[in-house]
Amino acid sequence: MVATIAEVPFHERPVLELLNLTGERQAPDPDYTGYGWARVPRLWLAEHGAPPRAVDDGLLLALHCPDDGEPLADDIELYFELPGAGPVTVLASRFFAVWLPRMPGDAAAIVLALCNPHGSHLATPPATRLPVHYALGEVESWQSRDDGRIELRAPRWHRARPTTTERAES
Image (cartoon, rainbow, N blue to C red):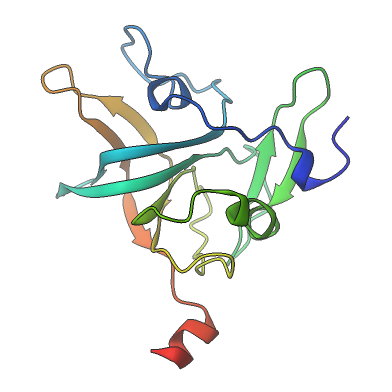
């Protein structure tokens, strides 16, 4: 049983496995609940009506939110299906406070592969100074058959707003 956020089994995984891109698929699996993190040399953020943009040297965090999660203006409820236990939820802000200090800090950016159905606007977690990219709306992962590039598609991509401390130091 998981008693604390630090005990959630949030591990590094191969990026294709993490994003459920192994094997052939015609569409994303809406029931896939895998989570974890991976380093990616390059991935692409695509949104409707705009050309995809590359994020190089990214720390990719794959997370999920519950379908019936609480609508919050500035946070997202995360959902973890735990092996051998029931699912647990935690606020993204609390999860990031515990887990980001444990992650590699030498990436150029953090990308959240996380659906954000309520359009919550996130601040940069205090545990990092890296730019954090997140979606407004549902996120789908795809891999190009032509060149193998990994793409995350969402209605809109945002960069987390700086915290008050970051703004004061700028």
